[in-house]
Image (cartoon, rainbow, N blue to C red; front, side, top):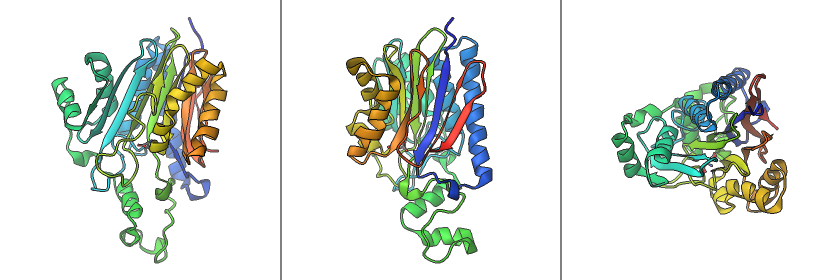
Length: 326
Ligand code: ASP
């Protein structure tokens, strides 16, 4: 038995400032991260697969409105929600992804079904939803994804501070554009996304990533999250990676795959490969964000080049570690 089984998760990176964080909100983030890690840990402890552990962790992150995926997803410029997700099995290199879906409660579960039940790797929009329905998934009313916090963030991102002032009354001075203490992610540096990576007791790796994208994105825009190699990658021979940040830059850097490629071709450690991508390569093109990664030996790294990243990891039999700031 491999005793190094481990799961790591993230809930997005960005300008997450201690000074802007409400202490109660901070506790809610930590508690959510801990609970979700505990769910992944119990799957791994029971001999479950890395693929099952990352699916379940991301499903729970999607259902939690604190995070930008599933319920709690950010708004597009049209005031709608378009969700993207991907999952990859490091033992077979099988992958599944969906993008631009508007009515699937848990995009990660549909991505997983694409991996298991389709000859294709990726479905978009209406086709993805038709696939999901044919596979027995129910469609939800798009209103399911609406949360007041994200709506307010969207209005801010559109420059309609006036509307937010109406909500916040006396808490903000006229014309002030700073986020309120309840909005730990500066909507002007609007990242989110959730992800999980895991190593199971059999030595297999898996990665999963899910997002609502970036606030006020143009309808039809797809970022790195559902692209295998950009926002999600897993190969037992090297590592499993899930990213979060300015998706366009992560796509251009093929960020997740680059971590694995550097390990394979340069022979560097997980930590060195991940740090090179996040701290050197991405900043070269103003790529902001971070990633979580685990290798086949159970090493974990969680680098980010922003002020914060909601993150945590847990090994079997020990207490979880969670963190938000640098
Ligand atoms: N990378 C995601 C995207 O571009 C957003 C994020 O991670 O915050 O869609």
